Image (cartoon, rainbow, N blue to C red; front, side):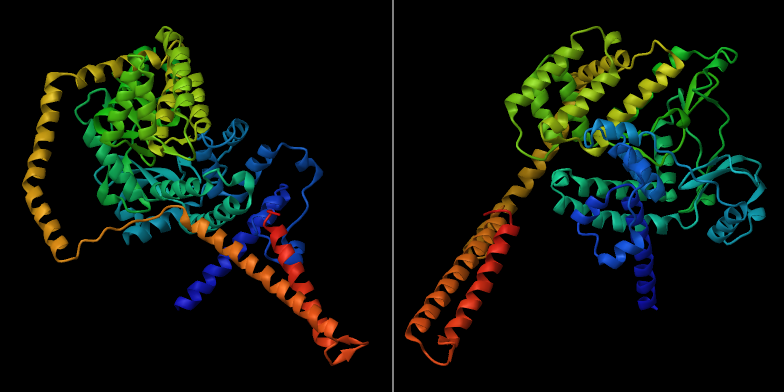
Length: 562
């Protein structure tokens, strides 16, 4: 049974792999296939699966062809492209603009399949779970579609149903995508420093979180618990008893989309107040709880009576640890006080490095950015332009922004766009800067110092209590000869391989010289047997030395180091 499953999985992977090769070659990316070593099918495979791109396709730019190829390869790759479109710090600007055009063009799956999924998940007919169930979905996307229903108790709910078979498709695509990322990063010089493998790994975790509706239900409940005392926000209730890993049931909310701002006046809503509240709520989620809605685009926000805001879709959430939040606040303090060195130090603490970081250059660029954007009135700061400058700043200094910190910046940028839809004069900078100043004041408040001292005192007491035992244990191990120090050498493996390669080549050269010299002696001495008066053994030696010499020369030339 297990062997049949392996065979079926291998067949499925091969089919999908061939399909992807066809798409890539059709859009003119055979060079990547060849360089990465994925044209393993030989001439026969090329004839079967790979076609030359049409002239009309070749007239398109490289990034246009990337977008079209991703759209044709389906859900996983469209999602991957959409996430990449938010990471301007990792990919070129022109590619970002192309990937923003990606659309989830997926028709809804049949009503019968939706009914079958619900019955399979609960083991009961739909009629025993809901008194009413709409035959037409109210929304449809590549991973799920949403229906409206009424519970047996008469409560209006929204059902989010996972598209049948989507997990298997995504798992297959991700396995192939990971293999291709490793091969491309290894063999294609332009991509060797692109962090492609980590990008795919990050995407893998992100899309699997989105596929788990149980995780989304937990996000919804946690979010609701955090914000329950705030009257300016409404969080839909989650119906856990009617939810599973593939079905999520939550309260159905009637509200106004922020794009329907022409209706605000008739319902006595205040656009400026709504825009301000949206930013305040996001900042509260980030800096008070470290758990925030990472995708507050217009489709995920509703406005309710009383200028109350309702967030929807909790599949994409961000998390900032306490230490990261402290570093962000510390950077904000550095910006307020024009302490460029402090900002630079905190940036290095937060970010990963992909190469050498030149502190003088880093501080110079930090100074330039702060002076450019923060020596002007808040209403004049262009947040979109500032974010674009920051996105370029990090890769220029061999730095990678952590995913959740980037999600934080992206969320604020989305809220800037949301605010301008509601209020054309809205500028998020006028909200963010005073909020940071409030956080800084709170940090220096005596009450905060007392709390931090209490925590530190507890740690010191625990350390003082444990120290005698730890020292005694170390002394006993030293006395018994059991104390060991492990040392790990970094970067010596590559050097060792190079030395071994050099030694092998020198040894081969010595052997070649010996064979050539020995053969020469045999020829000069005319040692029998002879062939046309030439010693056969000497002739064989010369031929062998010639073959080995050519082999050694070809191997050196292939390595690219003559």
